[in-house]
Image (cartoon, rainbow, N blue to C red; front, side, top):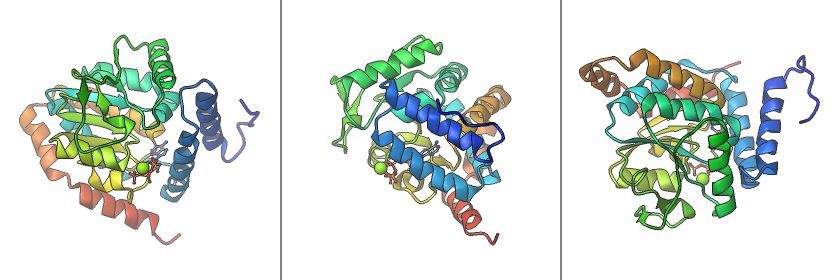
Length: 245
Ligand code: ATP
Ligand code: MG
């Protein structure tokens, strides 16, 4: 870890860089993940590095959707495994949803490293990609899934999804709930619910919201979902980025 003083104005951001770099060094994160992280940082800067109201609305609707799901699954890639392993495990537990490793750049070693990393943070079962079940409409490594996980899921929570697979999952009739700092990405515009926020801030808030809503009647959860418009939330996020400063 680099030696960043806590007084540094960009302390949190620099610490996150260290965490992602450590993820690459330990074989959890792809080197390409550094670029994805950099793109995220740029949007986080524009958003103000704080959770904004449009993200809170999406968190609420996303949690209602996940609580209404019959088979929710949490998809894990190398960036989120490095940044928020403990929170992913907690979210899976509170939702009673399995975690499933799913990465873009094919590597059996990295898949195993992500699984081991999640176990170190308390995960019991971590589903792995298989060749027994494949997603339609997609050619990348992300098409290989687990028959009891993403393959049969009705709602998939995919922080840091990529656009192609988001589209493929939706074509297969699944609802995608994602976290993406770029409100203009294909993922953001293609997902059912997009939380425009940093995963590092969004995950603890998602866990809190599950606790707050888990006893809510399904009819009320459905109302929360029906009142939410993803297009509207993304437009508000873009307007916020373009605001006068
Ligand atoms: P798409 O395929 O959806 O068009 P992309 O190709 O622009 O997306 P990728 O490189 O596939 O982007 O993935 C990186 C995405 O993840 C970017 O949109 C980036 O803003 C977002 N991102 C990166 N780090 C974070 C983070 N910590 N929290 C939330 N979003 C992030
Ligand atoms: Mg992409």
